[in-house]
Picture (cartoon, helix red, strand yellow):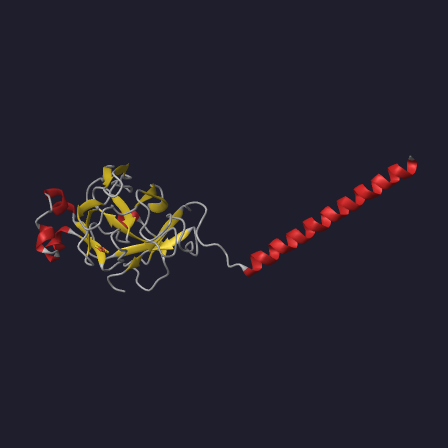
Length: 248
Ligand code: FES
């Protein structure tokens, strides 16, 4: 009987040792596999990222946190920053008036979403994906046209603009003519696009006058399976710098 108990104990110990060995090999294997498979791209969640820029009043200096009160109103310059992926450019536009939230139609699906309101001292700063939802053209081919440059648009686009479009300008893509309303969550003004641009939710710190990108809402950024995948995250998730593509 005693020998039987000892035999069982020996068997149990052998099994434990065997399992430990399997676990150890499994762990090594996992590490080895992780070393030979390239890292997964994308992000697991939206980072909160502060916007920086090269302040035009101090040219050639290092990027500093953007002060919203210093950002130009309805600028003809093409201001773009990358967020949250390094292949996802976004426009930044400041209006002279507060921007209220809008109900925005996604024609392709029949769904609607509510656009985020403007932020900043005057609730007038907004941001949108800068990748056209038709076939993916990027700035400067697609860009914001302030009111004083609307005469550059094709006549068929000019004839569709309402008084609010003429007051606040439009985003237009010169690839095939899609036009978006930046004062109304980038809702579609002219086709062929069937979707508005993805909207960036911003937050504002009234003490420092700084602004942060927090997440994207609305239709997914063109060419991406989700707003967080299909590319690599920006190199520094805490900081992204505005680029003036007009002078690039
Ligand atoms: S890619 Fe912009 S209109 Fe076609």
